[in-house]
Length: 301
Ligand SMILES: [Zn+2]
Image 1 (cartoon, protein in one colour):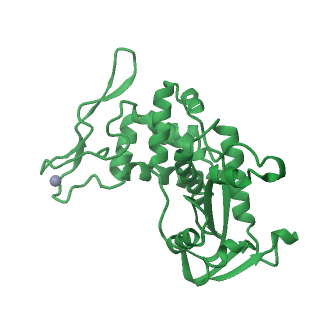
Image 2 (image 1 turned 90 degrees about the horizontal axis):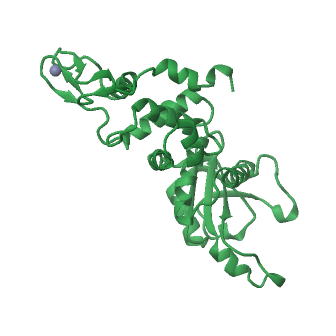
Image 3 (image 1 turned 180 degrees about the vertical axis):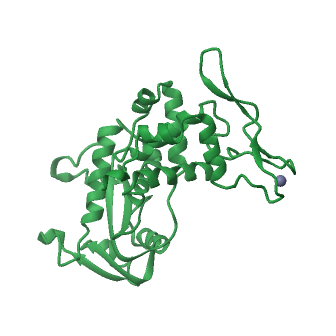
């Protein structure tokens, strides 16, 4: 990645020195300062300094046209709308999230933002909940694989508890378009019907070469797809360009990050964490663009 692609705290401070600059940016995401009537939008709020010396916006956080008096509130329906946290701190939180490719815990967010744990937790959750996954079908060379997360216990002697252990684990299917986007979804089971449903929802049949391992789980699920597989059980990890290395890297990355960053997450929370890792994958590369994309996502929420 080229150096200029880095976007950090200093850049943020330069681009968004005040809450007003942040609000101006939110306004600019969907409007221009010139109204269609020929008037000009001006802020209805003022920048003031409170008793503790903090810079605050007072008044309605809206803009009004100088001629037709039409009003625009850029924070409506966004995660900022009902929050008491100053916009500058929100922007900082969004930058931290955007740059945290291995995830970030509420504890670490608390430390970096200098807010209470409760606030840090809520901020993180709101950012995470606003990203979701795109629905444009993947195509071309698409790697697909499944993985198991969490669960309790081990297989026991002669693996006699194996099926119980596997049943208690969360199952996830992922598909990655090479040089493109990816999807990862928690699923209730790995039957042919479920895998087929995941495929139909996420991967286009035409112009797709589906790359998998040899697992017979796919045999009945992917009949309509052109499928090629590598035989891992025969120690074959790649045959020419037929491999699932990207999706295997993704599993390793997610599992290591979940272990390192989060002490424990419930199966109910797993999907929203997956969304976060998928979002980072789909927005890999340029820090600045990723930050801008996250800002748009939390506003549209
Ligand atoms: Zn107007």
